[in-house]
Length: 219
View (cartoon, rainbow, N blue to C red):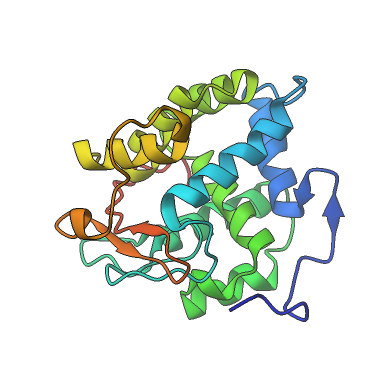
């Protein structure tokens, strides 16, 4: 199912994406992240695209029995505490508050409907940036990836700041996405991973049942 062109998108744009993305990147610059390098912004797009591929095959409407949903597979239910989708929305809200700006309606409404799949791609992407830039120990790794494009760095970031519970199978799965030209083992199948924490997305991608450990910088 494709996205309707009539769905809400943020009205205000900047060169680097949505207003939220701009706020995130402005704050990152103040923390010393170099976004002026020759390939920094293109590598930022690579980071978003590869995380989306790793989590859902890039499917905006991916769902998982674990309650993980959307392109980046945010959990919407967490019996032990705050779910990752709410954490991401709170982090996004803080970017607006810290700049004395009104929180946009799409974020306020998302806190009520609690469903990442109801956000369009720009909204999911900007929410992802607000979330990943606030993960503990993420700044140094993000900065290094933006400057070098080194996929080993991105793999480390995904496994330890986003997924947080890597297993050998999950590491091999990451390798199959990040280094497809180097794979000498047989491609993974869903059957081989049924006992692990994956499920099929609507588009056939492998969607992780994430159980994130959240130690937010700001909520």
